[in-house]
Structures are given as C-alpha cells and as structure tokens.
Image (tube, rainbow, N blue to C red; front, side, top):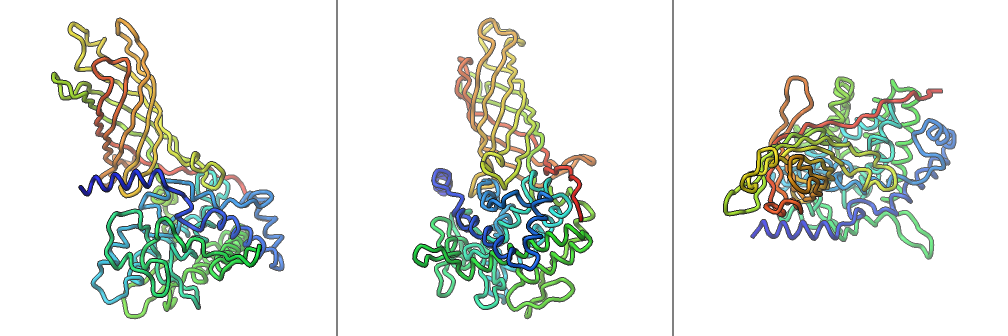
Length: 475
C-alpha cells in the first residue's frame, strides 16, 4: 500500500512540478541579480569591476539576468546529493536532526550537519570560477550558478536566519523528497508560515518574500535586499581574486564569515565555533581543492560515463519465462551549461548505445544466426523525486541480419534505473556503481515479443565534466 502511495505521489509530482517552487521564483532571481548590479555600480569603482568581469567573460555582455536558469536543471532539484545547488540539505540530514536525542535544538543540530558541506561546495565552485570562468559555466557551474546559491540562501523556505543579524539558524530540506516526516520537521517556525526544518514544496510562501508592491512599484524586502548585497559582494571578491589568484582563499573565507556565519557562533582559525557543544564547522577547504580538483567536481557534479549491462526480457509466454538474453553497452553525453535558456534540455543526460540479443522464443527450425538481434538506441535520463532513481525513455532501430523477411525494426521503451550500493574501482579507473533497471520495451516486428518486461543488471562508470581552461587577462 505504501509503495502504491509513493508511485501515485511520484506521478503527481512529475506532472505538476514547477521549478519555481524550489527557490526564489524565476522573477525574483532575475530582479535580485539586476539589483546586485545596481548596488555594485554605486561602489567607487563599481562600473570598472562590472566592465572587467564582462571583458573577461565571467559575466555576459549587456548583463542579462542568468541566475534564474539553474532552477530548470531537474537532476539538481530532485537528487538528494545535489540539494546544495539551492543551498538546501538532504532528507538524511533532516531526519538525523529531527530524531536527535542531544541537547541542541533541532534547527542548530541540522545546521551543524549541513553547513560544512554547503560551504565546501561553494568554496570549490568559487575557486573553479577564478581559475576557469568560461569552462566552469560551460560545464554547468560558473558564476551564475553560484549567484543562484547565494540568493537561495536568503529564502526563508531554504534557510532560517536571525532577523537582526541575518546569521544562519538552519538550512532546510525539501518536504517533497519524502512522504512521511517526524512531526517536529513539519511544524511551523514560531510566528511564521515557514516550516522549522523543511521547504514547503508547493505552494511555498517564503519563496516570494523577496518583494512587496508599493502601488505599481516593486520594493525589495529586507531578505531580498540582503540577498542582493551578498550577490554584489560575490562579484567584488570574484573580481579581486581573478586579478590576484593568491588571495582567493582569504577572500572567500572572509565572505563566508560575512554572509554565512551561524547564529551566536564565534570564529577561530577559519572555523565557526558553537557554544555548548564540541561540534564546529570548518570553512577553509584549500588543501583538498589543490590536491585533487577532478575529485572535487566528481563529488558534486557527476554523471554516468559508460554502462555495461546484461539483459533479459520476458513476454510472459507459456514456453519460457525469459524470451531473450543479451548485452548492451552505452555511452553518455554529459549535460551542459545550467545558466542559459533551455537549461532543462541542456542539463538532460543523453546516452547512445549498442546491444545484441538472442531471441530464445524463436520459430521452430530457426537458426542461431536468425535469432540474433542487433540494435542501436538513444536514451534520455530524468531524475525522479522521492527515490534515488531516474526514468530513462529510449528508442532506436533493431537489425535482424539473418532473418528471412523484414530485417529492420524500430523499438522503444522506458526504464526505471537505480544505482544501489557504494562506488568501486578497478585499478585507477573511473568509479563504478552497480546499475539495475526494470523497464518496458515494444518491438513491432517480433511477433513473439512485441511487448516485454525488460530486466538489466550491470554497472556504470562516473565522470564529471571539466572544460579545459582558457587564458584570462589579469590586467
């Protein structure tokens, strides 16, 4: 019964999902970005900074808003390991904080579990922008993705901040990522409509708290203005660090101290120290970044590279439980930029592959060769909410080289894909993970197996997209 409820909720989510529910709405991101540019122009050398950032391809010519587009990358909306792209945390951390038996309030417990990884991700992406701004953007990260994260950190659906100091009280998870939550997680914050540990889902009133209307004029709220100021300062330190890369570490750490310090914490040796607990949050990650930049990207932005699968299909015939056996190999094209129009399409993983199948349930007297089917196909992958899986539609052409009649046949299907278990390695290769699929396939030529259930087991390797850096002027 619970599984049926999950499937029903999953289908409803897919057909009613609006990316704007997961952040300041699209209009809000556009407005806040333009407000950040306006604030920067009021700096003594603000226009010089903007001109330099445009000249060096860190910002776009004409300064169009682009920080709204990352909301359209569905894998970053649904996948638990990528909630940091919206300055949120995983449901694992929320559950741990909600069930904690310690002395700390649940919001503070959740902040301690979540802030370090969130700042680490921002640190890495900032350092990548300084060394390779165009490549970072083309690979799906870059300055606009980081501006999006900063803006989201001021949404009351994503975080809770102290109203007087704007210091962080907690980082929230997404309610839609589970069907059931502990009562404390879904209780309201005192005197507010927002939830204690979670983002509402839809509707999400806190995501529109960036403005109010004064007649026909749009006026920023305190949260909106604070977000714009933080985005403006991000542009300033990007300019300073790009001209003097040796200062990158000090600049970004000071930025964290200004805009991401936890409520009532102190600072010691680039660490946020909390009273009443030995736990703390370290926010300087320079050593790890310099040691292995590729591993950094792989951790936060990885996608399948190759997959090798054994297959079996069942048409539920009386003669055989499994009517075909075979193997497939597939290569995947990594998603592109997340900060441009049509990010939904650009960020959708695409694969192409080849396979061979032996049709076990063939006509009497058929030869082994005539029972072989070769196929080529393409697939698309869409991350799903609630479960750590993806829905992969696919289609292609099958060839029966030794068949006596029709030799070519189209086929199409839909797979539900899981990657259970931990990564494993073979010598110094890409990390690998077990890959399981359950799907449906339609082949109109095969009179014995036009409609079939398809099972696959194998593995896929992972990689993170890195675009080779181009030279940048430091003048």
